[in-house]
Amino acid sequence: MMKCSFCRCKYWHYDENLLTASVVIVFHNEGWSTLMRTVHSVIKRTPRKYLAEIVLIDDFSNKEHLKGKLDEYIKLWNGLVKVFRNERREGLIQARSIGAQKAKLGQVLIYLDAHCEVAANWYAPLVAPISKDRTTCTVPLIDYIDGNDYSIEPQQGGDEDGFARGAWDWSLLWKRIPLSHKEKAKRKHKTEPYR
Image 1 (tube, rainbow, N blue to C red):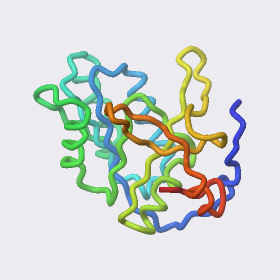
Image 2: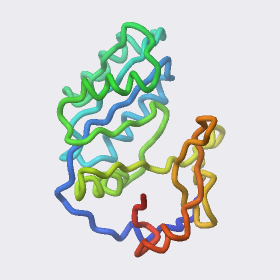
Image 3: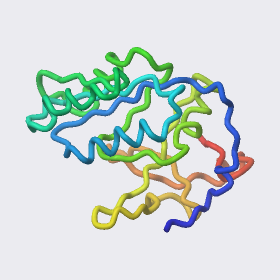
């Protein structure tokens, strides 16, 4: 079991007037159980009043289970989950842009990978800062799920407390760099968002 270094956050009380979201999930030849685990975690762990829609973008998959079987399965969700299929392979970023165009109901867009699982109480900490300031963009830290035993480990990188910001280096590789002491000093508590 993972030790929680941020346990204070479970006692936070978030504003009830959070923005609603369209969750966009792009997939290409994703395994059925993996994709369903992602979709189910969003549905089961997001308060219904905030979940406007889940938009699935099929980036030109050729696996049979992602065709008719998926179309039939999403009917169980009565329009909450929608699937759109690209006519050619677009790539992740273009497919996410297509998802943004297809998403019509939410006040904010949340992009998730097709092979992730949201945790309990994931929604409010991600959307509350945006609800307070519409110029804010939030990015979650994504922990590592071990493929052998499904144990969850914190994402590596950052400083001694695990704080980091995402950045691109000169070779255009994504990296996690430690949060500066100046930025840490501005924060009132460990669980406060940072820029």
